[in-house]
Figure 1 (cartoon, each protein chain N blue to C red):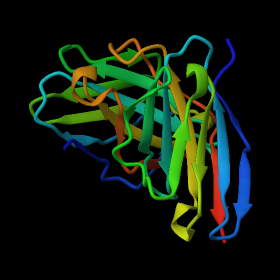
Figure 2 (cartoon, chains in turn green, purple):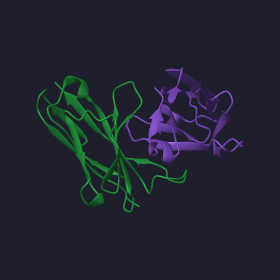
Figure 3 (cartoon, each protein chain N blue to C red):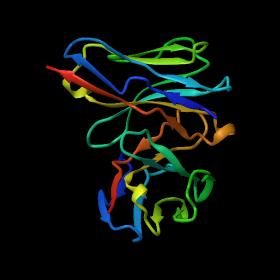
Figure 4 (cartoon, rainbow over the protein chains, first blue to last red):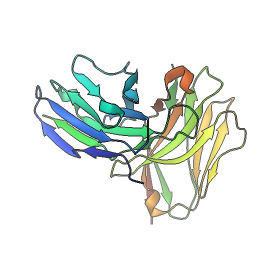
Length: 116
Length: 117
């Protein structure tokens, strides 16, 4: 079974530029999560999708961040315009469904973003 | 709101020895799940072990075991017979049942574990 795929793995941009990250979850997984992990901290949830609907985006800075999950499969996270404090690793995770302990979240390798 | 605290930023253990990583959490919920994740330098989060709050029996996965103290809201991870490959950042995480918060994970700050040969 293929794992969660993310691209690019690394990205360096200047502040005020835009950037997009892509995530392909494990086949058949209905739930997709985007987490932001700032250096030295634990990951923090940005947005959660159930199929192609948003379940939780309460911590997504909506003035600059946007995310979509077309057809309930792949997802894209965009930052426009980027700020220095957006430098972080962006982790994508997926699970089969939301309910129940059996629904382990599997993480991708992450995209490391550096904003100069 | 739920919080997770890992009070040990760094820990060190000799190869083949045992080490315990601490985690405390705060919640008013009675039903929840707790996890330990490992994050090596590659940054890939790997599930180590999980515990359902309603189970009194501590979870065990090979060399990894937990000491779950629900009343004290404590969830420590014990690694026995430590191996060089265990060196990584370890995160404790809390998850509410779906009907409360959609199943998102709330992570602690992490504990960096080094293993000395």
